[in-house]
Length: 231
Image (cartoon, rainbow, N blue to C red; front, side):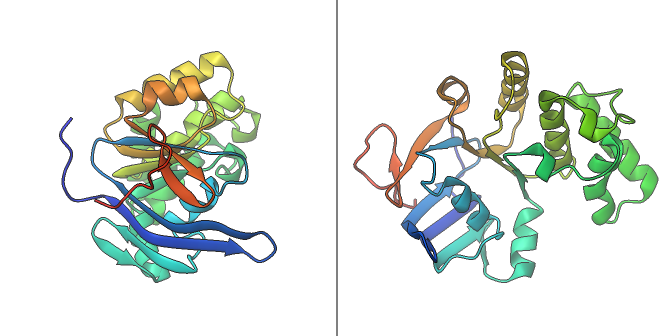
């Protein structure tokens, strides 16, 4: 597969430490290109979710730089622009769903972008239908199954038409049927992806490249001694 020579997301020499925990990321370098689905592996507590949060500006790096779609991101305004193009799927769907009904949750993003109510409804229904979730519009969000919640959170992200999907443990708490459905949907999507997953079978079927976060560094999973260099 031919990739663009310009990265969609790039991080350079990223460092992060927690006050009582010490350093979790040490001069991390990484670049994501069009067409890639990069899975990041690593032990619990290695800093994988922290890395995702740094990329989208939910946490601020102690040192290093984040580039989103060619733009250096330092201010909240710049990270807001990045988040408009890079949709983050949280590990726990309940952290992302806060409206009474499915349709209201999916409409939230388009309304914030300035769509009128009818436009937001139409766009949200189209997105739900594309994921096989038509008919769920009036369902009560907190009464959905884990697999259904995951698909609705994905709809909330995809309705924004992002160029990149950032997925934190997307198969968390899913049964095998829901997991297979999610895998099928993700494989059919055109977006580049950064994925954290402990599910090796899921990762192997989805990833175009796998990295491991170990001792604060990103390492190529196939050659576990070389830190990935920024292209």
